[in-house]
Image (cartoon, rainbow, N blue to C red; front, side, top):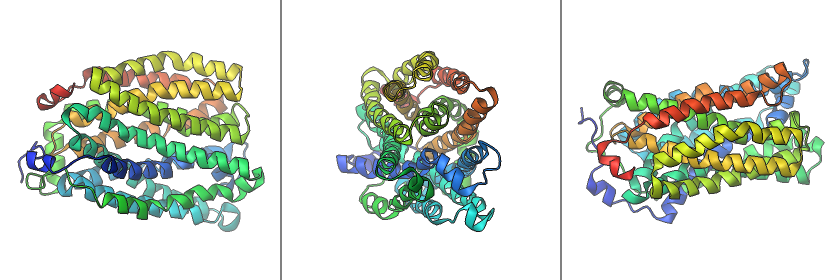
Length: 434
């Protein structure tokens, strides 16, 4: 078995020059991955009507968002298998695999017949597609983030690592953009009948585009010092690095729940709770995507200046304090301007904190288990908290009648993340990165 906790060799790191094209290669594939995964949330209302019976008012929507949650079930498995694969065979090989899998899941959603055509076989096959997408998404984030952090100059790790969350928000931006354009260009009947499938067809482009741009990347892992098997990677991780793994797991939920409320649930919330037009709801998703992408990078710049931990902490504290009164303003004055302004502000805080939180986790783990640890912590947390988020939000509103009820869940989970952020420490050889 290879030596545990072996970092990438200086030779391997020096061979990797993180040019702008390299960054685009990593984040474009990641953006397309998360575009494919999050576009489901933007079209949950339409998907519910297409794939589920509507015998009970609100039932098809609840089943639709529950199926969205199913995609999170295989995230931990993807994090374990693909994360360990990246620590054995390289970050580049793992990122190539995830692109193929996500394209397969997207293609299935795009072409599946609806409930009216094949009955319960339609939602059953939809679940299979979501499981494939979840497995891929669970394995994508770890290798992409690890690659950015390992290949970056030592004093720019926060900035380059922040592009990971920026790419996720770029994916949300793309899904919101397509939703808005479709809602504006087509009659409502067409969007609900067939046009919602168009973004999933576009998602199939993940495979050729992602493979082409990622083939030019240099590898950051020194495979000569890597573990020889998946079992060896996982054994090292769970025997010697349980504390950073556990804290990494607890650090993720606050950002995940907030991200899915502000990003994935914005369109559903605007349509079903605020009764706004579909075009405004989709524009809300677009606004959230822009704010998230921009302020993730701002967070990275601030992280290199003031420390990644400080930037992960204080915007999270502000978000926890402001989210209830801010959304209360939207509920009491549900105009398009109010919705877009509040969501953009809250997403700015979420993006700055979330980008640096993700960067902190790989800094706390050695290279030999870095991707597996990050992937497992992230995938487990996203499965348990992100996968249930839309169901919790929808159930809370439908059962209480209070449009603000989901916010108490968001606030409680963010308090946990704040405490985990305070407790997480970088490794001694990473301490200079703060």
